[in-house]
Length: 83
Image (cartoon, rainbow, N blue to C red; front, side, top):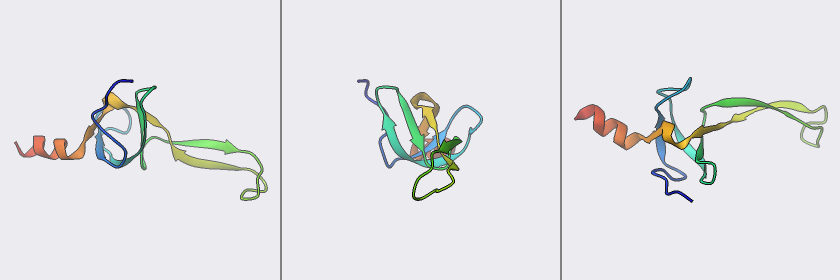
């Protein structure tokens, strides 16, 4: 598995894609797929089955994955801006 420059809990900035410029905290790192899940970024809608929480079923909005190369630690971003 490749080593990553970010880990769970880090504050990151999205560098590329439709969510460019957004900041958030990493919820999970998927090392085998080289992807991360960032809080409040890349929201997708998932259709869920009927359950006790959702007796009729529901459309739930949650975070999707972003490639790890498209995120940068927020501390590095602010240091770059001040330099």
